[in-house]
Image (cartoon, rainbow over all chains, first blue to last red; front, top):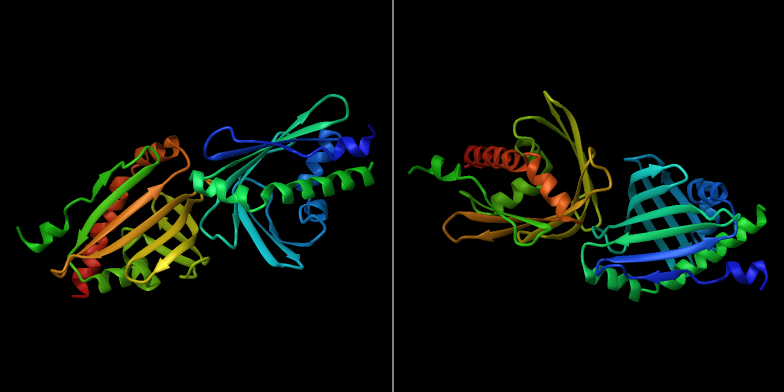
Length: 162
Length: 162
């Protein structure tokens, strides 16, 4: 098993409660580098859109700051936005996350970064919704496939900058 | 009991579930006029801030639109913002609602307007939170008193424009 197949392992998705999704994924890079890829808008734009053009229209990376991403794909243009609830460097980012297609239905998205001590980093992402229906709607929308494509693009970015 | 004491009745606040607050209030005006006071930013600015100056920095009153209010009081400046989830004229407004002091902790605020057929209008407002702790934090913050002050200011506005 080489590094490429290892890093292409799909994320582990679970439902810790009826309004949450939890996603666990390991990346073959140090916590510093994974943190940077998650928080430097220039790097974020290279993987978050899974190969689609991503315009980062707003990115105020601090508690209370707003962000807005616009992804341009063959299937259309999709805006995503929210506000940072917590920014704890190298440890945790928590923010609201809202898709223009369902305005007024934010979720709380939290990513936590764990140094595995062997050059790898575990990222645990949780999403909290107001209702079970909103959570299940997201799961049925193909969110898991899109997320795995984003993570594969992040693998590639981390491999390039090795 | 005259019209003034009638309209000064405090709103009826209940907790329909562990993450919700429900507020019921009757106004001595037609549904058209109450709807207008809730949705015309010039009128909204006259009651929402309970006598404090309210700057309406953004007000895109349609599904997906954003709003931002800034209230200036002797105790400081407070921003509130969100996005409209539903706008059904004369019937229902639903939106996210977030205070700058707790960024990333939106609630879903919904107001429904019922014509009582006797020149009065019942407004039922519900607030939905992610957690019981957020709901109870708002209740402990003095939200009920502030809300009754806003409603009293709305009574006065409706009486003036009779």
